[in-house]
Image 1 (tube, rainbow, N blue to C red):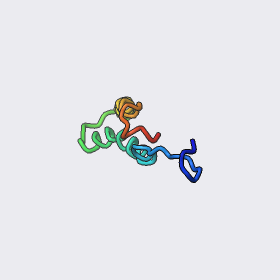
Image 2: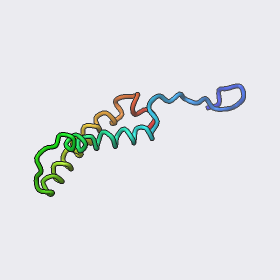
Image 3: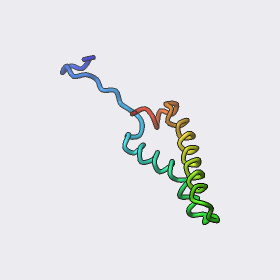
Image 4: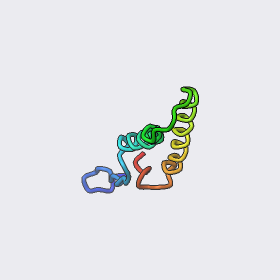
Length: 80
C-alpha cells in the first residue's frame, strides 16, 4: 500500500518485545526451576531421580509459558 506522497509504503508500528529478548527471557524462565532447586540445598537422591525431577520441572515451566506466548498478550507476542 503506497499512501504516502513520496510513494513509500506505510509501516505499521509493531508493539511488543524484540524476539532476541524473548528468547533470553524464555530460557531464563525455563531454567529457573533448576536454579531454585540448586539453591534450596535439598537432600541428594539418585542421579536418575534428580534428572527426572529436573526435566519435569523444566517441562512444566515451558508448558506454563506457552499460555503467555500463545498470542493472547500483545505486549509479548506482537512482534513475533
